[in-house]
Every structure is written in C-alpha cells, then in structure tokens.
Image (cartoon, rainbow, N blue to C red; front, side, top):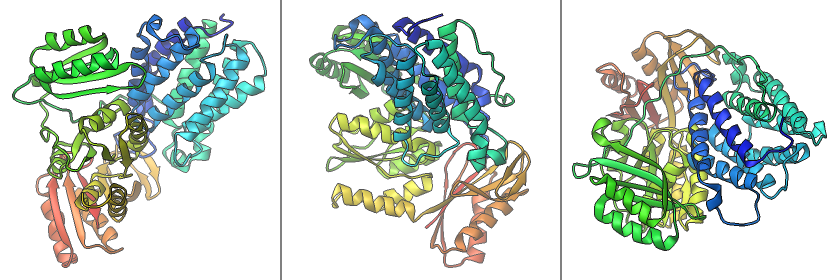
Length: 537
C-alpha cells in the first residue's frame, strides 16, 4: 500500500494503464454511437498512452533542475508525451487530464489523498477547457464525477481518495446513456469514459497492489484495425527514419544540415524544452541515426522500409507561395491525390498532434491552414495549432467535417487576400457545403431514422442517420434527392474503396434526370468503410 505517489509509481501507473487499454481496445472500439464499423476510440487511447509511456522512458536525471520533484518530472513527461501522441478527441482530452494532474502535482513535496483530489479537480477543468462545446455524457462527465468524489472523500489517505474517484467514475460511466441520447439509442456507454475508468482502476491497483476487479462495461467486440494512408517515400530513398532527440538548438541546427545532405522529407520539430522530433527519408539508416548520436541523445528510434508498405501517395508537398500553406487530413489514396492537386500537404487519417505539427513545420510556411475533415480530428488539429504557435507559426483550423467540405474550401483559396480573410472565405465555403456518407451497418442499433440491422445501408447527413435502406444505389440516389430538395447547384461524389463498379455513373444519371440543372463531379476517393461520400453546394 502506497502512502504517496512517487516517480516509480507514476511509471507503473502508465504501464499498467496502457496494458488495461490494450486488453480492452476492441471493446472500447466497439462502443460506437452509430452502427458504423469505424470505431477507433480504444485504438486512439492506446496510441496516446503509448506515446506517454515512450516519453517516460527518458532518463529523469537528464531533466533540468527547475524545482519540480521526481514525480513531477515523470507526470510532466507523461503529459507531454500524451499530447504529442494524442489521436482523436478522446486522446486530446486524456492528454489534458494528464496535463492538469502534472501542473497541480509537479511541485508538491508529496502526493497524498488531498493533493490527488485537488489535482483531479484541475484535470477536470483542463479537460473541459480542451473542448469548444463540452457535452455531458462523455469522458468529461466521467472525469468530473471522479474529481468531485475525490474531494468529497476529504482524506489524506491516497487509497481512499483514488478508490473514491475510480468508483465514482464507474457510476458516472453507467449514467452516460441517460445524458446522451445517441448512447441510449445505440445501447452503449461512452467509449472515452470507459477508457478513463480503466486508467483510474489501474491507479488504484498501483496504490494498493490489488485489482478492483470490475466487470466489463459492454460485451467485447472484435478489434478492427483501421485502414490508414501512409507515405511511401520516393524512388531515391528507401527508408523512413524517425526518433526523438534530446539536444541543444545549436546541435540541432548542425543536425538539420547533415540530414539534409543524406535524404529528403526532413522535419525536425522541437517542444521548446530541448526535445526534438526528427523525421527524414534516407538510404543510409546508420548515418541518419549516428548524426543524432553526435547531436545529442536519440531515443524512440523507428526505421521503416517503404517497400514493406506499398500505399500510393500524392507525392512531395508543394512549396507554398507567399509564406502560406494548407495541411489536409485524408483517408483514401484518391482523396489524397485530389488534395495534392489543390496544392495541399496531405497527412494520413487519424493523425496524432505530433504528426500534424510535423506536417505544419515541414511546409516551411509562416501561415498554415489545417483542414481536419473529421469531427474526431478537430481537437487534434487545434492542439497542433497551439503547439505551432509556440514555434512562431500562425495556424488556423477550418472545421471541415468531410473531404467534400475541404474541396470546397480549397477551391476558394486566394493568396492575394489577407491570410485571415482567406481563412474566413474557406470556412464560409466549407460551411455552405452540406455533406453525407453512405455505408453499411455493422451492428444492430436504434437510430433516429429507426432500427437497423447488420448489412443495412445507412445514409448519414451531417453525421446523423437519415435513411435506412437495403439497396446501395437506391439509398444513394434517395439521399441525393433529400439533400437537393433544400437547394444546390453542384454535387460532388467520392467513391470508396469497396464501392461497386458504376455506382457514381448510376447516381450521376439519376441526378441528370431528376435535377437537370445540377452539375455532378465524381472522383475515385478510395476511402474505407464508406462506398460513397457526397457533398452539395
């Protein structure tokens, strides 16, 4: 039984929490509010905490003597790693919870019950601040309940406070369907909240040496690995080398010059505290790593041979004119090529904060607009924008929720306008583009359009299920009719990787018959899960 939380306990908590998330990753991924087989909250939490654990691998003795305790250093490293590795809304919120804990406990001589309770309150405040429009019935409600229970415990006993927080979190998770109708209709609890409960239970286990032994919040669902578009390099360079580096700015300046002579796609991004993320494409892997050893202390070294991951990419990013650039998140090789043709730098789907930050830095532009193209990536993009500001780069996030909105936004870009005015114009164009997604249900559920069964065709308009059908083409044409009923002059179709041959042609023919004055543009998008994405402008 621990009386206080020291650095070793923080490390054990991170390791134990990550193991718990990995064991329940498929279950959490399966907690979708809609019956669409693209749930990734469990995966995002695992990737976020994996980054936190890797950051904790840094030797605490190398950190500056800034008055913080060893447990404070450990918590700060954990929070910083989680931020740079954060994926999705759940990952960003988790990183802010860890940041709140770290800020509150960094200078505390000892972490006992009351200190933990105060830190959980700060963590809940930081979590709510990370979300533009907080919604109850989510991870936010769970962390708030845990913080309130910890304070009500009013004890210096670490076990008492941690146990009260974990118990309250479990009860709050069970109440999330009462707070959020989408969860009630799907018959599930909040996925992010489930992940936080696992982490709090892991903390109790570290403190007491005993597992709380709580049952699973939902039946386990098989994990579905997400499809991702990744870079494949060029004909000139066969390997991607990445590592974190502890070094001075002077040493990194020399490193940049050396790595530039070894390869291309070079990006070296710092966190402002002496840690840098190094990325480069080379043929001589040894020389790239050795250059890092000369510059400082490399760690988290990864080497990828592009030939082992043959996925098409849109090619090297263009050089932005006038000190401006656009970074776009894309799922599907065809969609990536469309964005590259518009002069944007493309980042694979479901990026971390660090990956988006790397892409922003790699543009070498002073002003960058980011188009996330997914509601779950918007908070990650905002976190990357805040980090970029620390590096002197102005980043504005246009809150696109679909690739068709990003295409509309990029079409109105004008480098002759002031950057701020250009961002406003892009946001207005994106907002004027209504979007829909057509997919197959992966589970039985109750939606706002009625009950559905696995295999049914679903048409989601602006993220809400509007139609449930049996035939893919009929459902696609029906949702086009519904959207054009509200007006529109241009329909954009993006066909997915599993779309049947001729789907776009059949939808186009229907529009030409039923809506003769509407223009139709169709492209091969290559996105997974959704045979058709469409936009109406």
